[in-house]
Image 1: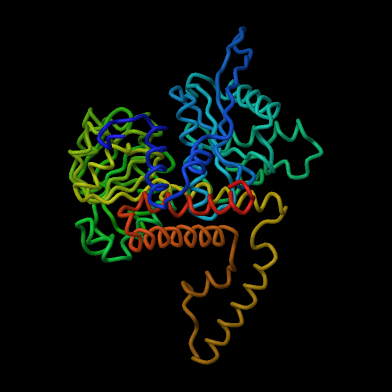
Image 2: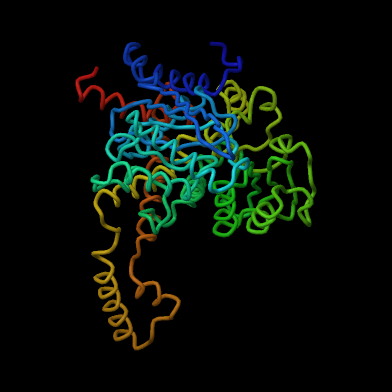
Length: 472
């Protein structure tokens, strides 16, 4: 395929996969077996709403079952179609493999505009979808575990879990049928922020390697760097918040559905999120310049561009105008395969979605493990940690004759909580995965970009699984 020829989302994912397979010299028959989805189901079901029946259409795709259960979110959006679901399922396979989460890849979608329905109606629709998935074997703690995605969240996951328990009351692991639930319903604290926090960890790790930073034409650390974020939902907002608050970056633009706002002095993420939630858009946000053609702002001057909305936002139409030397893909597939070739040729560095937004599935794994073990992380060790730390504080104070400052003592005496453990596990996961793809890129003669390296690291693990199971 000519690399400058634009393809759809699924075509881009397959092209990226094929490029990595060629670099690894994977046999063509095995490439074919791994590339395609194992199964895809289309669901059409009626729901009685407002005195009449409305028929809804959705899909669930299972890409690979080399690990079980398979994992992937459920997306509610009017633009959802089968190709998008298949592409996202494939990404999940390689994403999980890359960050050593022992799941196969899957994805689901329902062609629906959530804002068209009230909460009670959405609950009916979601419970009916759960029944359909269960009837066809596409939801189970041991086979297929959905999660939140665009248009869904903790509320929908709680409905799915409750409906599954009603369908299978004797399943002791029923809560593990879905992740991303509220913490009071078996969910994991920090799950909503996990993807954004993962983006933060990867970007910070990138800036910890001076040669990587220099390679894309930047210098120094993260502090003071200017970022543009497209999409200010949970992922975009939390990414911006952590980078601004923890690293001292400057948020100079936010791109949303109704346009974009810009301020060279910097935008406060919390204020933007509050305004967006209250008004439904960013127009008229005080102290910022509004640009109606929001997508054009992707080409504005900045140090780091963070697309956190939907796929196919940087294409051959606008790739040549992108000025950011570093692009961190917080969304799935925001850069097409053809556009990526143009960006790489112009010296840009792309931190790939396969790694950058893997924080969500990593926390989902922690939640699933907690659900099937029926044990909260840290429950057995917290008091022991507190007692040990108290002895350490007492020893320091006795030895020095001075009290330990309260700001240092309080965290130690609080003990290690579940949220501390999952954040530590997430940071370790993201750092290790970046290190693996970086090493692959630097040591392979056939790989010279981070995305191909990420696919290669993931593909090697999937191929190994196939061979160990005797399937190749």
